[in-house]
Image 1 (cartoon, helix red, strand yellow):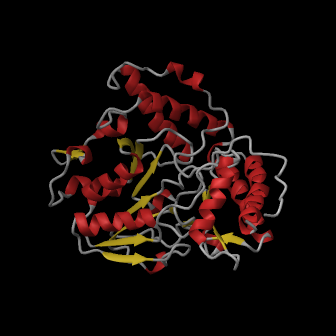
Image 2 (spheres, one colour):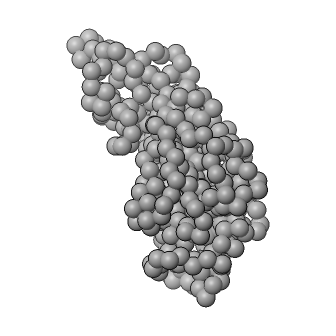
Image 3 (tube, one colour):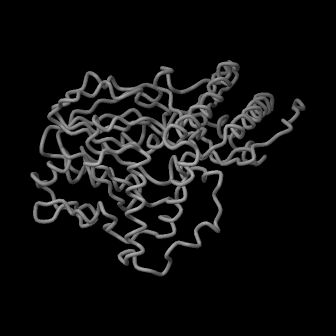
Length: 380
């Protein structure tokens, strides 16, 4: 085995997981001492914290005032499922998938809800032609494919005038990419992604058109209590004022509020986008300078600035999955990068989280180690 010198500098924070993601740089457990632990979330102090989380989310993301924002259980998955079970079935449905989570929503709609949906798919690294879809149907899609590193370049393909609803899983896009609210009727995300919050809490954002659908349509299937958004044909307003459907963790709420504070301190949404862009660009530049690795996303316009997915291209590699796992294992053993293996359903490779809570200096420190691990494995 060739002796390969290790880089001199390690990332100060080796956490590059795509979920749960790195905590914001200023995170300190002592900040959470003001969380109202041992209190009911329905007490005034709990309701105030939950309402603040909703309204500060609205302010930071620029969500229109006539949109409803709710905190819901079961992370982004819970939010997407609530939307699909509550809203779909009134019109024909188009399901869009170019990675594993989008494929999961297809399975739920076709096999669980048993709707005769039109399904449009693309291979990992590519994207569906969103302009070719029929927006008189309800369209369900992910904005940023976390497991493929492919994102919507913009909302231009979605018509302003449409008969159907757009239901968008934006969990690795919110707080890192500019979401066009006028093109999105339902938007979901989770706290543990771009702001590095704690798991199990999801956000559900409804446009007036989505609320109108909820109040005028009753699905044909039984609705589990955890999914119910209406009562007596009217929206349950309390969900969108902080009166959550099931018990939230007030510790996680406190953490999310501090993450929002930190986000404002770095320039709000524009600052967060700039941080993610800088992180991703460092990886893109590294790929451009090394012919043995490249971005999984085929079109540069659709490359994610959060979940950056990479593939090895060296002809000497005979088993891509084993090689990628070995590289990731080396980097973890050196305390350089944790949890950067490709998602289990994705093509073999690596996935480096570049959201705004990651420091660009840490990404830059990681990359020489990536080259070291590659050389160590290719010559082993």
